[in-house]
Amino acid sequence: MIRKILQANQKPARNATHSVAGGEEKVLREIAKDVDLKDIKTIKTKRVLKEMREALASQSDGVAIAAPQIGYSLRIFVVSGKIFEKDFLNNRKERMSGEKKKNDAVEVKSKIKNLIFINPKISKLSRERTWVPEGCLSVRPLYGKTFRSTKATVEAYDETGKKFTRGASGLLAQIFQHETDHLNGILFIDHAKDIKAEQPQHA
Ligand SMILES: [Zn+2]
Image (cartoon, rainbow, N blue to C red; front, side):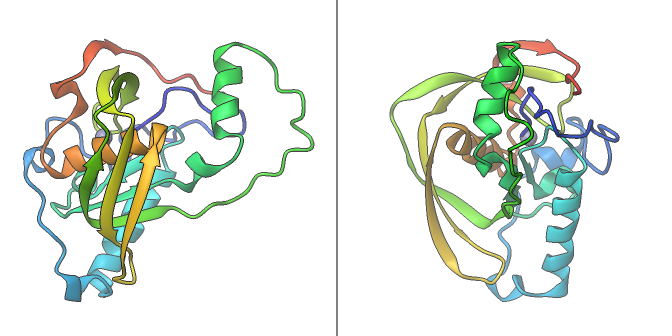
């Protein structure tokens, strides 16, 4: 998934299509397969995770990526740690309102690790839903509004094969729904409204 508004200190995307499958590719329409639990710690899975991290890192506006987006029909998604940086949301609001950041100099940029979800299952979705802006690395340059649950809980395995449960609201809950859709062959444009083509704004 991508967010339209970039942080001030992010670099522009090097190449929008770099190693990311376009919306017309068949793998994006397949039901992805579960990763065999005994394969989680193998070199094969590690290589897929590495490629996913690299593809995500190459997209400055990318906040998450699913394995089918780089050609693997496997139930894995990765969420960028940058969405947990304390200034991520503030920055977006300021940039949307056109205000200048006052304390750039004192700001310390933290590096929070990406989150990995293997064989994720949404176990809870709030009944409350809201229209949120959404885009996708595989469906550039289209953006639209999707009707998403405001809260979601996912059960998944991490890269060491340990099962965990993660609850979320807001952006992360939206990401859970967007990325789980990818694993089921669904793209946001299948159900979004107000779909428009927009070029990302580079800082
Ligand atoms: Zn996507």
